[in-house]
Image (cartoon, one colour):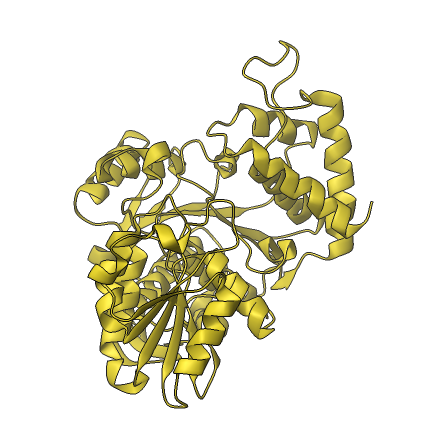
Amino acid sequence: MTYAQATEFLFGLRRFGWRLGLETVERLLALLGDPQARVPSIHIGGTNGKGSTAAMLAAVLQAAGYRTGLYTSPHLLDFTERIRVSGAPIGADEVTRLTEELKDLCAAHFAPQLVPSPPTDRLPHPTFFELTTAMAFLQFARQGVEAAVIEVGLGGRFDATNVLIPQVAVVTNVSLEHQEYLGRTLPEIAMEKAGIIKASVPIVTATRGESFKVIRRMADDRKAPVVNVHEAYGYTIRESGLVGQTLDLAGPVRRYAALRIPLAGRHQAENAVTAVAAAEVLEGLGFHVGEAAIRWGLSQARWPGRLQIVSDRPRIILDGAHNPAGAQALAAFLEEHRSALNRLIMVFGVLRDKDWQAMLAPLGPLADQTILTHPPADRGADPRDLLMADRYCSKVEIAADPGEGLALARTAAGPEDTILVTGSLYTVAAALRSLNVPIA
């Protein structure tokens, strides 16, 4: 099997969609000797910011000297981005070897395909996410990882990653998303996110209002200590720029003056504070972290595709905002720095199951020109179907794909102007490929 054949097999499992339940992944992991139980872990869920928080916390633990694993999804350019050890993506040869091993195991122990009523002695074949989650846990165990930071894929309660008994759980925030799976209201979605809370395991959260009440009730039921980031920490942003920010932070363990994070957008400051809170909880559990590792780790954290500047003259910013809350955070960043952006040309491609009107409502009025395009995904919305986009955007054009959208934007932009590519990580990934920008 080659790497191309391995990824073809893995991506082929996407036809099975998402399975919200743990029986199949638990069986698969049991056949592998439960590798997830052999590695200390931190489990991070939430609607937005969970990937950024995971990346920052992993960087802090790595700076503290721990052999650190990081499992995130989705990837931007290559599958190997999903599984990292000490910052380095898993090798293509390792993906190939692990895929062969898992493919053979699944053929021997699971039904050959997903069916409504599989044979009584066979569970349904693992989905793409179930298989890749098992691959990550197996890789981390075999590589001797000392702390694995694991990002939830979808929801929490029935997500394949929720086989963990972590040292710390984190729920960043809750907003409306994946309502066909998670519920129609914020409390219903918060209940799904709260499903990662385990008995007596500390939970760190930046949720607010009704969502926090749900988290608190679940934590109380499971006798899990709660760290509410908004109550336990106070911070002030000293400087916020296009390429990062500096903040002063005070919490229950120590004070940090002039913490530097190279991630732009004030929402990333909250994610950084959440990562610090999780690191300090780990300190209380016996992990040797310390102020120096927290400072250095945050300063080195990277999270591509999120307010990432990839070119100047014209400036090109890529941001994977893909739901209304993400769009509002992006709009706040654009409003704060509007004078430095000059003319703003937006290339917008969204998935058809997203509330694109609620995304364009804050973003459209900030753009001088909008180019609607088609993300390279089965769920990508045809830009011609985004009826009434001109209600929110001025000077709307349509491009067949993000590459063409970027070409149109670059033709229209002057050297001091800004091009923003957003709406979906699929759109951002296509822009990275078009611009030939690698993932660090």
